[in-house]
Image 1: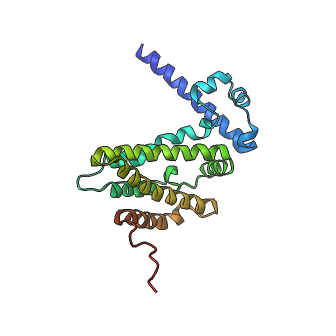
Image 2: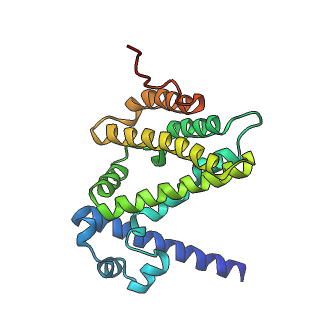
Image 3: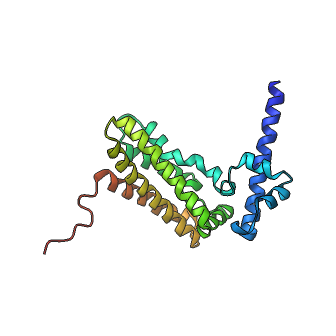
Length: 215
């Protein structure tokens, strides 16, 4: 029975991946808006209902595999080292992911990954969904901060907002440079330095940032 269940689960996973791969190929070839779910189902040799069993929406066919990264910052804080601040933990995790060239931090220059990024940037519905995923990540971080710090909910929201704003700005800059033709290896040293600067700015606070000189 266990072996039978294992086989069933493997087949379901294979089907899910086939649907996702088929959808991406069609989206990249013709554009997100010009491909219907019915066309994806036919090309993947499954029913339309099967597609929706695995992916709740058309946008999920692009973004669902990325959703588990929405909780990365929250996990970094929850699993941080003793004596390590929340900001330092998020920075350390981010730099580690840069070293791995993880797509979730914008430093993967594999052609397919870059093509998917272009697809997202060029498709309003996908951009909106990606923004929603980022907001979900912010909320998860705020919840962990509120729990860990035992403080005010608003304080946790403000702290999470600053941390995630820095993180997202870094990701966007990495994406920008790769989409302009630079390699991940070339961008990596700058990306690491920028991450340390950005999170240090959050750690110190913005009190002295961009202060206009007194006349």
